[in-house]
Amino acid sequence: MAKSDGDFEFYLRSLSSQTRDSTSPDPSSDPYLLPSVTKIYEMCKEGGSDELVTRAFNQMSKLYQRCISVSNQSQTSNVVLLVTMLQFFMDFGDVVLHDTESSLRSFFRSCLSREFADPVAAGRLLEFLNVNKTKILKSFPALLPQFFPLLLKLIAWNGESLEKPFLSILPLMISAGSFLPLFSSLLDLPLLVVALEKVEKKNSGTLIGSNIASIQKSAATEIILALMDEAYTGSAIENLDDGSGFDGNGSFDLADPTFLEILKDENDGIAERHWTSPTMVATLQAAVNNPQTDRLKQILQMSPRLLGSYFSIALRDIDDSLLCALIPLIMSRYDTMCPDKTFCFEVQKRLSDFMLAVFQRCPHFIALLKKPIMDRLAEAYDSPAKTELGLHLCWAIGEHGAGGTSHKDVARGLFESLELLLYENLATSRLGLNQESAIDPKGNTSRKSSQARLLCFVATAIAKLATCHKELLPRARVSFGKVARSPIVDRRVWRRACDYLGLMDEPALCLSVLGPNTGEASGPGIVDWSKGDSKMVAHIPFYLLAEQEGVPYHDFSFGDVFPVE
Image (cartoon, rainbow, N blue to C red):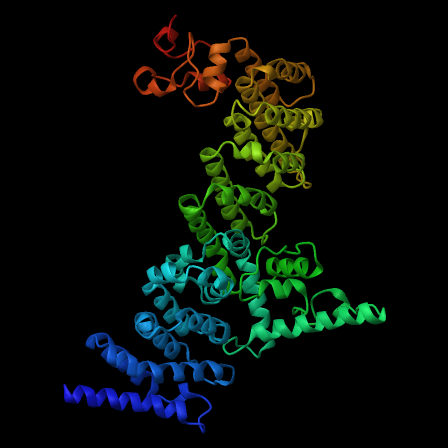
């Protein structure tokens, strides 16, 4: 016991000497300091004595403050040392009444902002956060939501090797204040990598020890001074480098707002990404046209997976009001992202899957989001991505009856938008593939095929809306009648309209096939699909709508499937 006390005093004196040593500007440069801190922590943990903790805390706190104060002058990484001391504060802070959260915040601001690019430091920090995630969530729930941009820098720079521990702490970054900004930041991770690589190039090939926060403050100060000069003297603000956001070597202009927003360390709410700015256009163009770095390749593969985890957490833990607020943001970002084809495909698939899952859980969101949905439908032909988004929105509108039978006004408004979309594009939907060459250098064949596909979805949504809201049936008949009589309409759209006109002549069958899947409708001739596993031996509606012709190949009667009055 005496030997143990002697060892404890020895290690404690080692800490004390560093707190008093004014000749050493960097305590972390002492190779014996980390073992001493580790031994003191282990002895306090094993001994279970409040007296040991109290004796150690005074020196530990002084050393921590000194390391933080000189972190901007340190030539070596002190993350591992500081994290070890933070673990001491996490475990024993309650005993000595220490404000551990303030220590954590000072660590993020003063140390991690400079050392996130160090793979050893990044791995040690993620290990620390995973070990303490229960306590952090309970005692400091606002900590990681505030510093998630800094943690995203960590994963963006260090790549797939840290993906698993990062995903474990992703739920801790999500709160009411960070939920929406985190979505945009995850989506823009490739852009963050490009920006960090530009900073690395400016800093002679390394990011370790680079104080990006000071760059941001300096640039922000220049902007403020320029604005003040304009306000008081009337002189115009000069645009650096012709306002392009890039210098002659293709690097970011440090005062560019896009640069400052991408590289921020703390969450300050949703900020608009300047996707049409010269800086953003040039950055995205360079990212696509130039050879991709290994780091960028990794993040292009990781980002969709991180978004998938984010959406899973959202569906499990986030309340409906925030989910509803996220849908318009998803729709606005559906075609504004890093233009890598594989990346866009993977991300857009996850965006559409999440959006449809939210509508499935909360169909009334369609009624609440009527205006942004109508705006997106009006833009359906602006780009292939917006066309794909229009397909999913048409499906959701029809499947959920524009939010349900109680939303008559919303259904009417959405019906009119779909009707207008159908009429405006009716005359141009004919493919005429027989008259076109097999290879169309202008991509007209693909465009027309996409247009006809969208019109088929529009027709289905119109039919489903009219089935759910009976007052719309006459207008739906008129719409399909115009399509059926049109001599130039694409054959697929024409056949879809004819099918729906035929179904509408059989109300029970129409309600069975096109009605909402709620199980509320019942009556003579209406199929109860919930009993289909015991009564059905074929998919009758799909036979009716799949352009099958000739004698039916089934060997049963419809009386076996449809209830008789």
